[in-house]
Image 1 (tube, rainbow, N blue to C red):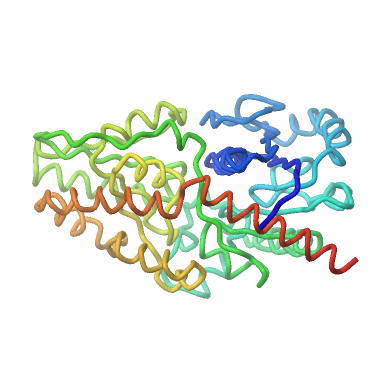
Image 2 (image 1 turned 60 degrees about the horizontal axis):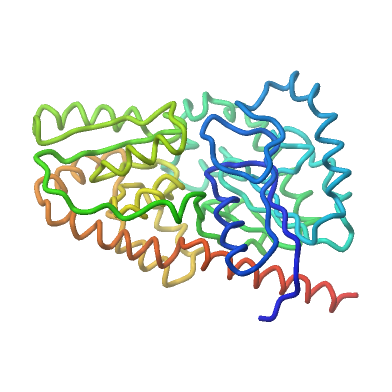
Length: 371
C-alpha cells in the first residue's frame, strides 16, 4: 500500500523495548519514527528521548515533575501524524493510575494508536473466572496489587476511554483479547536490540546452561523454577548449570542469555515475553506456558508454528520437560534451530513494522472515507 510521509511518535514507556524495536522497523521503511520515554527504567532500553532517567518515581515525585511533562505535551501534541501509545498509557498519565486526561487533546487529524503490553489490560478476576490456571490466580503476583479488585475496575475504565479515541488498538499478549475491544489486533513483540543480537555458535559443553530472568518472581513462577532446579542439581550434578538473571540492565542480561542453552520464561501468564524473543534470536530455546485457548487470536500460521515450537509446560510439568531435554541433547539442538526460524518469521521488526504501517494507512483511509 502506498504511504505518505508520516511523522510517528511512540510514547511514553520503554517496556520490553517493544516501542524502540518497532520504531527502528518503521525507519527501515523510510518513515520518520521516534520514541519518547517519560521515565527511563533500570533496564536501560534505548529511546530517542528520555525526559527523566532512573527508576520511575513515586507518585509524590511524579506530580512534582509533571510540569515538564505538560510542557512536552504542548510542544508535541500537533507535531506528529501518529501517536502510538504503549502500555495503555499517555504522556500525562505514564503510570496508568489516572484517566488518560490528555488523550482527547492530541492533534485532531493525527492517529491515536494504543498497544497493550500485559497488566495494563489484564484483569485479575475476569481471568480467574475464565480459566483455571494463570498468573492472576497467584496472590503474590506483583505483590498482590490487584487482589482487592480496584485495579480491574480502573483498567476497564481506561480501556473504555482509550477505545473512544483510538483509531487502532494492538495487543502483544493473546490473553488480553478477552478484556480489550473487538477491533483489537494482535501484534508480535519487537525487541530493541534486534540487529545487535546474533545467533550463537554451537559449542560442545560438559554442562547444559539454563537461565531464568524474572521481572517479577510471582508472575513468572520463579519459586517453582528455583525449586525444580534444586531437584535437578541433585540428579544431574555438574551436567547442569543455572543462572538467575535479576537486577541487570538489558545489555548485561543479553550477555548472560548468549551463554545459555535454554531459557525458562513465564509459567503462568500463558504467553512468552520479550526476553524469550531475545533468547530465540540467539538460537536459545525457550520453555514457557502457552495457553492453547488464547491462540485463536493469533494469525493461523503463527498459532500453528507456536504449537510446534513450545512443548506443553506448566508449573507441574516443568521438571519433566527439563528432564526430557537434558536426557536428549538432540532435542535441544532441534529446538534451537526451530527457535531461530520462528523468531525470524514472526518477530523481525521490519516485518512487524510493515504490518503496522499498513494498518496506519488503512486507518487514515477510513478516516478520509468518513469525512
